[in-house]
Structure formats: C-alpha cells, structure tokens
Length: 84
Image (cartoon, rainbow, N blue to C red; front, side, top):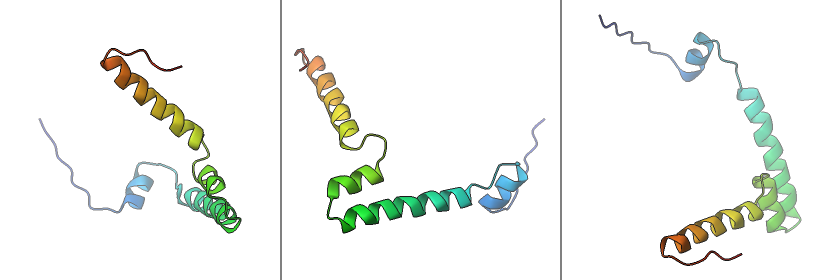
C-alpha cells in the first residue's frame, strides 16, 4: 500500500511541524558579527585580515594546503613524485 500526503507550508512552518529549533536568530547574530569583522578589516585597509574574518577556518593557509593536495594528486596521476 502506498500513501501520499501533500502539505503546503513554508519552510518555517515545516521546521516547527517537525519540532526543529528556530535557528534564524542565531544565523542573524552570526551574520552581524561576520559583517562587523569584515567592516573593521576593510576600514583598516587590510584585505588579508578581511579574508581571515570571512573564512575563520584557516583562510589562505587552508587554500594553500588544498591547492598543494590537488597539485600532488595531479603529479601522482602522471607519475611524478610530489613536492615536499
């Protein structure tokens, strides 16, 4: 037996129906904090600081590690030794 139920509701109503928490206030607070950090770095004329504020999980260092991993993978595919 197959039963189909169709509900017409907004995403907020669906979250409330399923008992999920309302995370909108937390998201708003996080966005305001991120904007304040970016604005402070931008006002100081520090593009690197702005990127650190925007991407707090490593920023340029994480990008360089990711780029190195891609390069090492490509080198391994063609039979070259990866750079250290």
